[in-house]
Image (cartoon, rainbow, N blue to C red; front, side, top):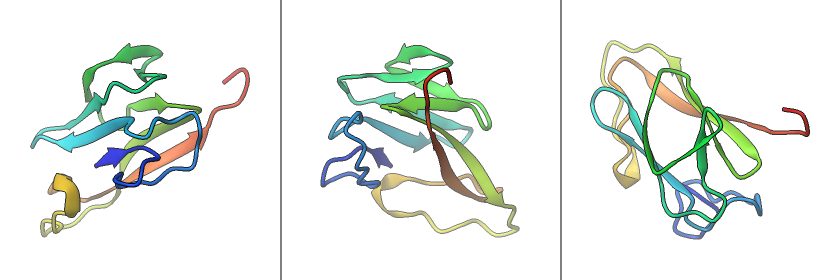
Length: 106
């Protein structure tokens, strides 16, 4: 799942602080892997720029002026169907991308 504001992105963000190709999330069977796509402002986890990072459950990351985390929406006994773009959620439930706008002092 590409997180960016470019036309080929899965998310199509309008935030000008996010690059046209900013970062990408991959499910590798055990956790989400976050990869920065050489974005101008960088992708941060725990306040540090990363190139690639294995996200912990509900760990937040920042791209542009927004902070995000990947979380489960519900548990399911059957595996969810993979969505487009190679993004495969874990089989223990569906996932969603939760985000909030950062403000001064956040």
